Length: 323
Length: 294
Image (tube, rainbow over all chains, first blue to last red; front, top):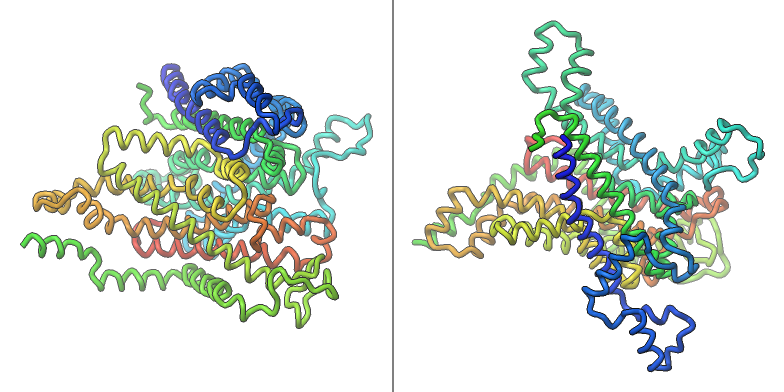
């Protein structure tokens, strides 16, 4: 098992390098002279421009520039934002937790709902419930996150005032509020964003679980289990579900990019100061170092999650060989 | 002699089979609903001029922020722009972006998949590592970054989405090509002296076309959604009317509470359009291959 883990880790290294090369190429393909971002340089004075270019190493061949950039990244230096002049790594560090909390909550909620709905649909195939769930999952996959988010805000935050419209916590909370109060407060702020982010994910998982469960329902070991006289409930929970859920782990991992993409939109709607919101602002401001840093961190996050999914799959499926 | 044999083999879908697929598609109720929605949307896009009384950028200074009436079917916004006209012209843009991107992304994917699966070896290895590398980036994040760097023209948006999303089609086509190239009819064609190019185009391509068609339909839905997301986030083409941008402009609480006509219609339009393409894609998949459910 340990050897398997190490091998998987080693296999992640080329992917990691690929991500850095891709990000770097993207930034070098961008039109415009990065030097002009420095207001202190007089762009009409050519000798000064040349000198600054040489100082910053912009005359070097691309591979040389790439490795210097890579060296900086390994040391945790992602450069400075062109707009705020603050360190990109620092800005990402403060917003990282917000995004991870949001996506993790959505991942848990959508997995529970998606698998539950999928199993119910399959067990009652072609029932009214099945049709209703199928229609709902199509809706979940098709209604864009920004529209769902706005509908939820209009109905549950503005009309019925059940949840706050945006932000992460109540600013006017008394300073002596207990831990429990603070937790409850921030949870209320999470409800609508997490539902918005979960919807497409839950829909896709439900459809996949349904078909995976239907496959399992026709297996001979189901008949065997029933012939032994086991109760339907036990057959479902012990014999069918574990086999049906196994491939779902892979799908959960495959859905992660969508989850991260969705968090960009959801953070913008609900004014959540996470990496997604940071990325949108950077994209609008053409803040190159920030865009690069965020793309890089999102991709690494994805890589790590895929690694975890692989490990989980191996841990749950005894058929996966470790050699 | 050689010619007739190959010509006979090239007839992959006799009319009877095509008709059976068509009937199976029609029986799929959701797919039919999707087709109806799509027909309406396409008609809206084609007949945009006679359907609207105003240009999408024409302002009515005497009727701003007004609710729907007989002149402005879906009311007007803060500037006095007619919402219905904007919606109709945005349908044209969305469908154009979706279909162009869908065709482009599926073409790239099919080409890569065919070559990768047929040639194999280091070419296959290289192309599949490229696919892995592209999949390693979250789609919306990388599209956002690329469009921001290249500038928000429609051409750039189409190009960027295509370059990021072809990987799914490539994988499907590659997998099918891998198994198809071992079939007897391919060996027979080769024995008759058909070149690799001819085998790929005349013998393998027709057999993967059904999956490609399904992938294309779903790719269009995906592209429309990504474009809407981009314009919602403020990175769409500012010169074109767009559903996403209409919602972007409508994020204030006053609008959400009191002016439904500004944000509900464009939101429903994106949802219905994506839903319709997804329905049709699902119906096509079931029609081509009645044995797989999902």
